[in-house]
Image (cartoon, rainbow, N blue to C red; front, side):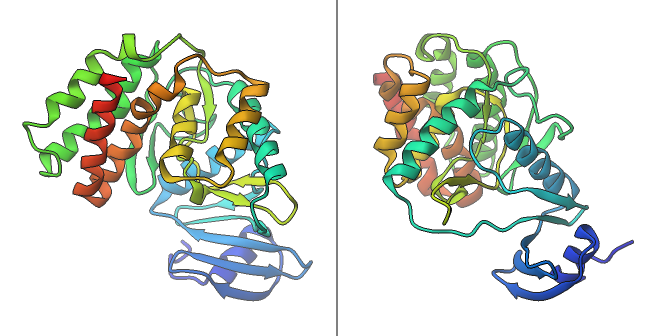
Length: 288
């Protein structure tokens, strides 16, 4: 058994089969490792086997679509994930437009069902540090309520982050989801945790995707997450997206609806401030 305390360099050497010539810690869980052929890889420590399993499967599933750029995964074990390093640059308008077109094509590459995990990936996965169940459902409104909104609402109430008296507001959104959701769409291939920090602007002039919580879902959920936490040149991203794959009328009115899931996840992980944002998003969804 390999120790979870082995160095990132030792992990990279074992998984890639290449001698290591240098190692640089980036954080408590990330390191850059240089290999003897000049390649640099990222070694990331995960929170257990399912976390590295889900992330590796998600990255590979996104890469299979051959749309937006995704780092190559070299391998994983129960504690570590090794993938190519992305050389980063500055976000630019051209890169944003390429990203928008690529993201539309990625979503259109589809998934077998709402909630479907990446092929070979676990049903019990994660979004950030929060558990996320990849359990399938026949239609988006009922699946989104049952498997994305209500589990985190219940946990937030149990932990006191959302008051019992506040929960009915979000429950009303779930009840009304069939009418609030807009036209039915097929399952999209989602990144699933598409906040700005998981979009790397490469030195090659392209956007790269990292750290997915990939699953089959509604494409507007990925777009709402970009909007929630801000993203450079978002207007250009959305315009280019719309050119390739037009969005249903009324999308701005549905942004709060799609932000409810990530906001509740953040409420569970980080506390009351996000709970208040989730309640505001629920109110906006009901009154749009």
